[in-house]
Structures are given as structure tokens and as C-alpha cells.
Amino acid sequence: MADAERITEKLLREKEGHYFFASDVIKDVYGMIHEGAGFVNEAWHGYYGTNQGLLFQKLLEKSRPLHGPETLRKLLELQVCLKDRSLGFKDGLIKPHNCHVEIYSNAVCRSLGYGEFKTERVTRSGEFHDIGKIAIPDGILNKDGPLTDDERARYIRPHPDTGASMLSLLAKLFGAVLDDIIENVRHHHEWYSGAGYPGGLRATEIPLGAQIISVADVFDALTSRRPYKEPASPVEALEIMASEEGHFNPDLLEHAKKHLLNAYNTIHNN
Image (cartoon, rainbow, N blue to C red; front, side, top):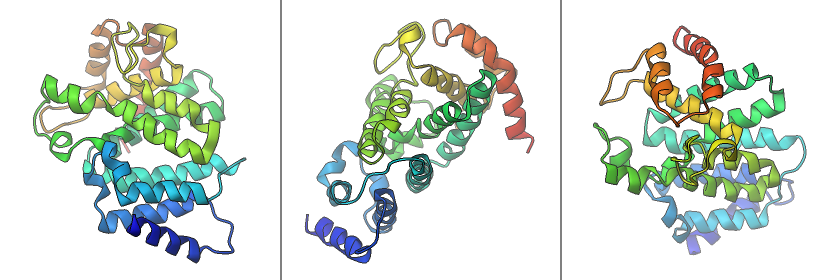
């Protein structure tokens, strides 16, 4: 508690007399955390027992919320900070995966005729979709082989809820503007048949943004090299996805195919 109080007061003194956004302060905090406190090696569920968690809470209480057109820009800045300072350090594979999911999601959204704002919402959700993996131990995240059923159940399955919970904290900064992003992150592992997690949602119960991210997520996972597997070709990946009965919205997957292929070529030929 003493450390949290001391760092908080120091940061606030430096900004005394100036209008500042909470996200700006939190960026400073994350920099200090990663330099000295090793946040990336701590499970999120224990986060509030640490000085970092207390500091995060206190800064939310003392700094001003965001409103208006600056909101999405500030969210992007904070997203970059979170992703680069956490997941980028934990697993070198996650950062490019998130970027690919962003690109694939963007391509599908545009093909569906989404406007700029709606496309941005889903794209941002794609960048954030695996942020809950911060809570997964490094030994699991960087395992050289496939995970066991127990490891998946214990460590992997909670990550959508964990990520949504983390973003819910940021909603104190950004308000309702994050609601759809939170739900897309929470439900990107749902199956169209209802066999997915965490909510067991089915068909139209699943937010369309989450359905798009699910397609993008699996397509990139299949076409990417992992320590324990070679990448599938994009055509092979789409065949595998089509064979997984009940996993995806069949109409969405069929529509997305050519747009995923085009985006794949853009990513891998540049």
C-alpha cells in the first residue's frame, strides 16, 4: 500500500495544475511496473492484491474520464501500451497473431458493408481479443507441444472472461463506448452450435463482431507456424474450418472465404 500511495502521489504531483487523461497516467504506471515489478509474470486474478492493482484503482479514482471524439484515439493508445508491454513480452507469437486477426476482421467487416465506425469497433475487438492471456503462466503459453485437456480447461478457457474483466475496468475510463468491445472479447470462443465458451451462446445470441473475430482467429491460428505444427495453407485452413460442424456461422464463413484469402496474401506477400 505504501508503494502504491507513494508512486500515485508522485505522478499526480508531476501533473498538478494540468488537465490529464487517466490513460496517460496509466501508461506511465505500466512503464514503471514493467521496469521494476514484473507484472507480466503475475496472474491477473491476484492483481488486486498487489501494489500495481492498488495504484491502478487509485489512479482511476483521481483522474478524469474520457468523453467525446478523443475516446477511441485514447483507447488505441492505451491498447498499444497494454499489448506491447504485456503480451508482446510474454509470447512472441501473440503480437503478430493479434495484428493478423485485426487485418482479417477488418477485411470481413468491409466486405459486409460496415461503415468506418462499426468496422473500427470490431477491428479494435480483434486486437484486444487475447488480452486475457496475460493471466496465463509463461510455461503454459510458451509450451513446445499441444496442451493437455486439463491445461486447456484450467488456463486457456478462462482467458475470454479474464480479458473482458480487464476491459471492464477500463470502461471506468471510457464508459459505454467499450461495451460492444467487451462482449466481442468475451464471446470470441463461442460456437454457433452453442458448444463453445464461456457462455454457451448459440447462433444469433453470439454478437456478430465476436463471430467475425472467431473466424479470423481460427484462420490465423491454422495458417501460422507453431513450435508443435507447420502452418496449413490458406485453402487447407478454410477446408478445415468448413469441416468443423457447428463451430462457425456457415453463411458468415462462406462469405468470408475470399476476403480472408485476399487478406492472407496481403499479409504474407508484403
